[in-house]
Image 1 (cartoon, rainbow, N blue to C red):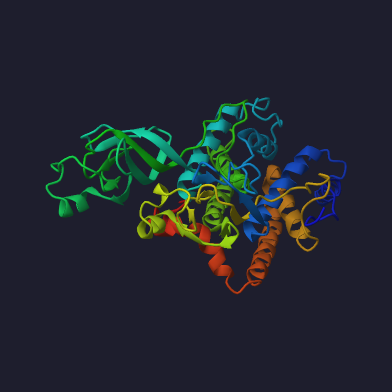
Image 2: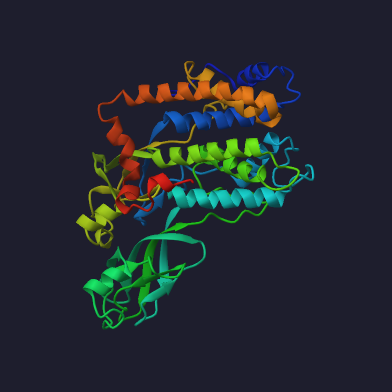
Length: 439
C-alpha cells in the first residue's frame, strides 16, 4: 500500500514490548493489553510530533458548517468510546478488563469510572474548545431580551438573529456595561433588530441581546456543547479527538487514585494529574488544520470572529462567500455550500496499515521512542519502584519526540505559521488566559 509502513507487524511489536517487560509469554501483560498500550503510544507520539498530516476533501451541498470529527472519511473522525477507556483503565489499575460491565474488585465500580471520565471529558471540551456545533431554531420571544439555552451548552461563541421576514443579522458579542455607555437608556430601547449579545452578566445557560426583537423568529448560534452522557455498558463516543483519549484517561485516573478510599495512591494520582495538564497544553497547541482549498484554489483560513468582522453576514450567501475556510473550535469549520473543499489536517494516528491491517504505522527511526512510551505506560500498574524507574524511560521518549517535532518543523520555512492556523478562533476570541488553562 502506497504511503504506508510495511516493515513491522503488530505481532512483532507485541513481542518486542513483551521482551522489554521481561514477560515473553505474555502472562502478566496479555496480548490484548499490550495492543492497548502500543495503540495509545502511537497516538501519544502523534500528539507530540504532529507526524500524520493528511489531505481530505468533501463537498456538502447543504451545510456551511461541519465538524471534521463526524464527516464520513475524515482523517480526524472520532471513533473511540468510553468503553475503550474503561478497558484500558482497568488494565492500568490491575482490574479485570471487562469494559463497561464491572467485574473487578471493590476498590472501584463502573459508576465511579464513568463519572470520573465524564467530568474530565467535559472539562477538556471547555478548556480546548473541541466540541463546537451549530444550534438552529433557538426559540425567541418578541419584545424580550433574554433567551434560555439547554443545559448541554457550555459556551456561546456566535449568535444570529433570524426573523420570520427580513434579513438575518449576526450579533456582535458585547456586554451590558457597553450597552449602558453606548445604548442608554439600557432596558428601555424600543423593539427592533438586535445588534449585540452578551454573556458576562447573565445567568448561566442564557444570553441577552441589546434590542428586544420586534418580530417572531429564531436565533442560530455556534455553541460549545458538553459531550453525550456516558451510560455503560452502552458504548458512547468520547466527544474529543481520538489521539487525545489518553489525556482523558490520565485525568480520570488522577481522580480515581485521589479519592479517599482503599484505592488512594497520592503519588500516582499526582503523576496522572501532571500528565493530564501536559496533555491539555498539547491539545491547545495542536495544528489540527493547516491548509485549505476551495474548488482547487488555495484560500485563507480565517477565524469566525475575523470573518464576521470583515465579511459581515457572509453566511447569508452560503454558496458565494469567500473564497475562505472559516475556522472555529477544534475540528469545526465553515466553507461555501456546494464547493469542493480540501483541507490538510493533522489526522488520527493510524495504528496499522489500511491495506492488510497487519503492519504498524511507524517509521524505523521512531519505533524506539514509541516502544519507550508503551513500556512506561505498561509499568504504571506495577506501582512502586518499578513504576518510578519507568519515568526515566518515559523522559527519554519525550526528548526523542521533541527532537522529531523540531526536525519536522524545520522542513518548511513557514512551519510556525502553518502550525498556528487552527488556533485563530481561540486567539481572536480570547476565551481564556492560557496561563490559567488546566489548573
